[in-house]
Structures are given as structure tokens and as C-alpha cells.
Image (cartoon, rainbow, N blue to C red):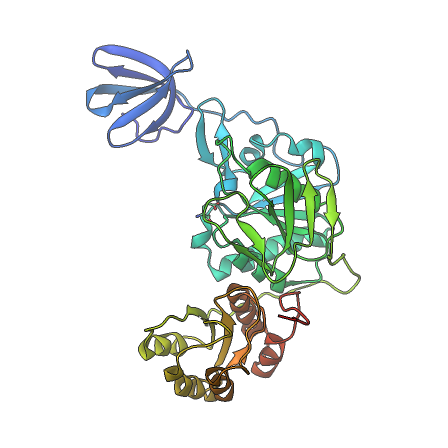
Length: 409
Ligand code: DGL
């Protein structure tokens, strides 16, 4: 019995004295599923199968060939993984991860009506498996494409999308062509999938004049509007809804309507300042969520193994007063300790309560209304590319729209 069967292979199965031929779909420890010519799926218990013979290997039939396909301003799609990177094989009904650009475009033939599309799968991973080195690889691929003036759409898992979009925002300065992330909460085999519209909207935005890294996702649970978020301002706020992504402490920079028309609000256009890519990132930066009962030992672990630490503190930016002497000691060793708020909305303010003032005196850096994950990617970027004094200065300076210039609340 062949162990190398792939969904779509033509097979012949002998089961309890009967012979079935059809399209192999899947197999687990108990059952094998095969699609018969009638279109019905047949589930057979493995213990009664005497043989499975491979008749012919499956060759996916995509409408698009390798290389650019379609009409319109060219857009390059970089696949990194996540739900959006899967496609439905209509012959088998199986949902499979796309492994080639051809497979990635297979499920989305409409894209060819919008743009001349080319694609490359840079990696195919769940976004919780992303490493900082992956951000550098993705940045390099994007940079190579936008240097040729071509807009890029990056497909990504939703879970850590805001980490990657903010990391790329910092690593590429003054992008010369649009850099647009998108993702999906529901896989393309589900009628409620957001994958198609999100990708189409992202491709449209990648044909525009936007000069800041952005993310295109559903605005609401229906298919009527997409939001264009700044890459340094968004958060996944729901584990399953299609409108999970919200801009935090700022409005979306624009929207895309159901006819794929873009409506810009406040956005950065491509400018004439030189584009630059930063090729380093510090692996020695940590991010910790403070909680009542957190002990000193844990703070020691985080601070000892890193050169910089972002703390998501409570309220206006607090941690227990027990940590104040430790923070002071680490700051005297030239470690950077930045504080953000678990509230997400609003800014830290260490001038209001005595705890805040104690932390300020100990040398903590208050990080205004920056999101914790954005502070984390920013500090990793700065420590990888600048000296300590410049890192400290830039940490509290708005460099990519990650800090509001003035907050009234
Ligand atoms: N764990 C998810 C990820 O972020 C998979 C599903 C998705 O695309 O969101 O990769």
C-alpha cells in the first residue's frame, strides 16, 4: 500500500472483496477517503482494505501558468503561509497548502482581471512559527521587488501579522512601491471565506501610490468593505471573526469598497527620499506581559538574557514596585527597558502615580501609545542597526507613524 499518496491521485482500492477506483482524498489512522466518479466521497475502514494501487499521479490544473499572468499594472505576490495560502483543489475538494506560485493563483483566477500577477512562495509556515530571521528574509524579497518599482502583496497568517507588518515597516525606509500585507481568517473552502476579497483588495492597493507598509483586511463581517491599516498600528482583536483586525490609536488609512475602489484618508504617498533596507535585527530583545504575582526571578530571566526588554504594563504603564530596584540595576548595565500598556488604547503616562514616577527615576523608557508588539519589533530593529544612544533617542521618536505626535486622551 502506497504511503506517498497525495490528494488528487487516481487510485484503485480493494475493500472486502469489492474494487473501487476514484480520486484519493485523505487517509488517517482509521479511514481512507476516495472520491468516486459519481462525485460521492466514499470512506473505507483501513482494516478492511487489502490493497491500494496508484493508477496515476495528480497534476493540478490551474488557469494560470508559471510567470506573470493577467492584465493590468503588475503586482508581485509573496506567499509566507497561513490560511490564505491554502487553495481548494476542485477536483478533490481537498484544501491544500499552496507550494508553488501556480498553485497559489489557481484558486484566485479573478486576480488576473485586476493585475499582471506573478508570485513566489518565500516560505509556507504558520505565522506563530515566524522567527526574526524570517522577517529579514521577507524584507529582502520585498526590497528586491519594490526596487524595480513593482507593488508587492504579502500573504501571511493572521496570528502574528502585526509583528511582521511592523518589522517590515521598520526594516524598509521610504518604500518606492506599495508593500501590502493581507491574510484570511477563514480558509478558501468555506463559503464565508474572506480570502478572495482580502487578496483582491490588497492587489488593488499594491497598484496605488501608497508609500507606507499597510495591511488590508475586512472592515466588517460582511463583504462590503476592507480597511487599509498602517503596518505599525494594527492588532488582531478577535480569534475568528472576519473583521478581527482593528487600527489601534489611529484610524485606518483608507478603505476599499466592494467594487474595489480605494478611498484614502490620511496616508503617506511614495516620496522622493532615498529608499533603504536595514539588514540586521537584534535577537536579544524580549517582550513580557506583567501580571499581579509575577516574581522577580522571571524579570531576571528576561532581563539577563536580553539587551532590551519591552514590558506591557498595567494601565498607564505600571509594574509592581518590587521591580523598581531591578529595573534600576539593569538600566545601569546599559539595558533598555521600555514600557507600554496592556490597555492597548491610549498612552502610557508615568507622571501620574508614584509607581510611574519610581519607574521613570529607575530609567524605564515610556513608549507613548505604541503597541507592545510594535515596540518589540522597533527595539529589535534599532538595537540591530544603531548604537545605544541613538536607539534610546529613536525609541521615543515617531519614525514610521507608530507613535501619535499628540494625544489628547
Ligand atoms: N495560526 C494561523 C497563522 O497565523 C493560521 C491561520 C491563519 O492564517 O490565521 O498562521
